[in-house]
Every structure is written in C-alpha cells, then in structure tokens.
Image (tube, rainbow, N blue to C red; front, side, top):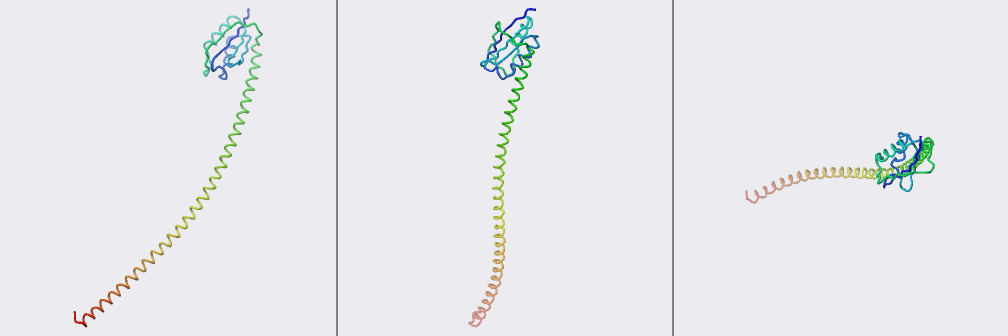
Length: 195
C-alpha cells in the first residue's frame, strides 16, 4: 500500500475556537487515515494527513463539505506534503491531553469568575442589608409619627367634645337668659301699659 501525505489549510474569519480540530479528527478516524495532526496557525487551521489514496480522497471530500456549525470558511487549500505526520494514535493522545488542559484552564477561569461574582453578590447583599437597616429606621420614624398623629387626634376629639359641651351649656344659658329677658320685657310692657 502506497501512503500519501497532504497538507490542508482551512481559511476564514471564524475557523478557530469552533470545534474544527475535533471535527477534523473525527473525519480522519472515519476516513481510515494512518497519520494525522491538526493545529491552529495564524488564525487558520492546518491539518497534516497521511494514508492511502482512498482514505486521503475520502477525508478531503468530507472536509470540503462538512463544517462545524459556527465556522465561517472562505476556502480550503490542499497541497502535497513532504514532512513527518504524527501517527493518528499518537495525535489522539496528544489531542486528549491538550483538550484536558483546555478544560482545566476553562474550569479554573470559571471558578475565578464564580468567586468574583460571589464577591459582588456579597457586596450587594451588604448594601441591601444597609438599605434594610435604613428602611427599618424610616418605618420606626413613621410609627412614631403615626403615634403622635393618634395622640393629636385623641386631643382633637377631646377638644371637640369640650366645645360641644360648651355649646350645649351656652345654648341652655342663652335660652334661659332670653326667657328671663322676655319675661322682664313682658313685665315692663305691662307696667308701662303697652300690653
């Protein structure tokens, strides 16, 4: 079996950080390549492949028609390659380690962001506690104002009762006085002969 080597360069504004290397590895395994490696180079994705003519052609056809969902590809350049291509099993081990490192790094970043968010949340809770304290003070003052208002209403009710009592007393006094005056007028009229 005659082995061939090719280099593919995938160019476009969005070919990295979209899962392209993993997709290419899957296509390499399903095409039956014996040698494979892929890496990000200057914004592009470079794949080095080695296999018989059938596996190489199958891989290239698959790469030309299969893209990761979020990739934006402008063109794919295919050319012969003379250098060393890593065995696909060796690449698998290396790629697995690289992905684990990437996952671990992302995990640490997520934990750091989570710590930062928790710190911000603590600060917000502290501010909320301060606001609740101020709100409690405002409610206390409002309660005091309502008590004072209740006292004023009680005093107002007492004052109104006293005024009503005075009015009734005054009315009785005035009626008695008018009655007395009317009697005196009647007596005076009688004495002066007006009646």
